[in-house]
Length: 109
Image 1 (cartoon, rainbow, N blue to C red):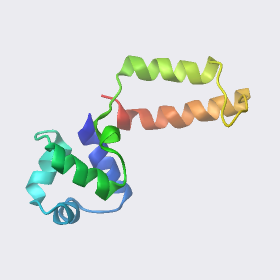
Image 2 (cartoon, one colour; image 1 turned 135 degrees about the vertical axis):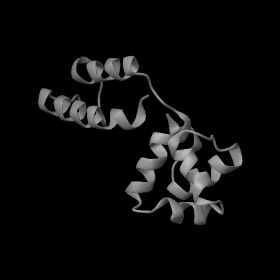
Image 3 (cartoon, rainbow, N blue to C red; image 1 turned 60 degrees about the vertical axis):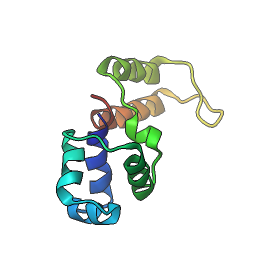
Image 4 (cartoon, helix red, strand yellow; image 1 turned 180 degrees about the vertical axis):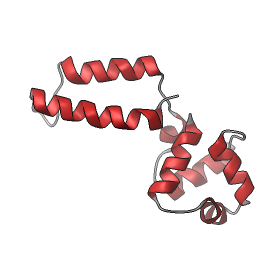
């Protein structure tokens, strides 16, 4: 869900909840509830959060299911795709798969 992304993004920017809340002009408790999934930011706040973290609102809201993640991982290992016009070899496919597998818990519910 989106709140998992909020915490991850905040930690990547090495900011506390209080610092983020200050930048968004809200109370720390309100921001904390966003990260816990207890409260959903309105659209205007989503825009502010997206700008702060330099991501799109779409990125914040999009999630995937475990089934979709499994399908993606299978495709990365076996699918017919190119990267910058090149077909990845088995070693590259495994590396791509491993990277995506590592981030899936942060983007899927």
